[in-house]
Image (cartoon, helix red, strand yellow):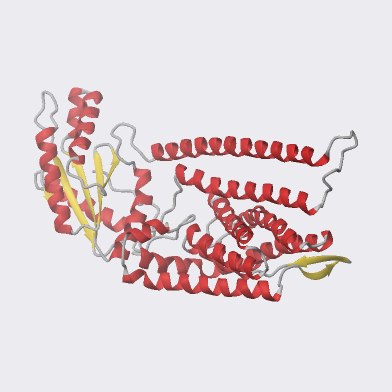
Length: 475
């Protein structure tokens, strides 16, 4: 068995490497685990920050921190200070989009009610900030922004996502302006204030805080909640974009209707050609609704197709073409996730390596087609011994790995023995004795070892099994 090449891990470092991209904990998954005292500090922190956000939203509405005037180059501008954007954005990147969006919705709902909006309009008004933050999170995910912002490219990509996302909040100003019957100049100042204010908070407050504290917060949360999720499925991609786009389209349509009402056009007003104006405006609004709806449906369909193809391509790139097992490339990502999970749970992580005995003789005497059939048969036999969460990898040639989450050395050795027997009893090479395997087992306690160390020890165990006569298990 050739010496294992080291994957992308720091040799000798028991801690997982720094994540390369976004990471989050789906609220549904965390809640499904039931009562977990280890996670209590995380929930307490989220609840405390949410209460702080709601309180600051109430103060913002009462003290009127929207559209604070200042002059730049002789031109009057406005800036708004809305602290819930900062708090909810940090929650979005720290825990996940559901946590930050729910905090943002409740906070903005309180702000709308305290600012004088009716309950129904406040409920719609409150959708703007969550849509803005979900769009920011999704763009950061698509742009491969590393939330710790360790490099300049992460900073400018984050800024680009923030510029696009802040446009979502501008739709809310239509509701606010109409509810308060503000003049055009005051409404424009508020619009500028919301855009500039949110953008300033995201780039000048949220980004530095992520750079300063995200790595530590992520490590502590991983220890409390277990391994995070790092890939967004095609289904969830469509659902997320659907929510954002439908919310923005609904706010835009509502804003158009309110704008028409705010113009106070008389019922008998006519166009230049003599036609009544209000019915024509209604036709235009209907056309815009149909157009936006068609664009929305077609864009979501295209997004679903692209996301599905991307998910399929990613899955195929991690699979061995012949046997269907995971390939060598997939090992680093899966090991990191299971390493984090085992450390968080305080459970061991085990690795089983097996190598088919005298496989070269099969290829030399019967040909590579027969060798391929033996490899496929060995994988099928191995799968019969595995639990649903065990991971099988083809490392190269006739060398295979099995990663066993939350499994002790004794349990791994027992599985290795079942595996050895299954291969010996079911995989037959014509004109040759039955195929056998030499199996090596290595384990860590609570995941406190690097992949390099675990691979080296399992590799040594396989060599000892071969040196003792093959067709046996060595732990």
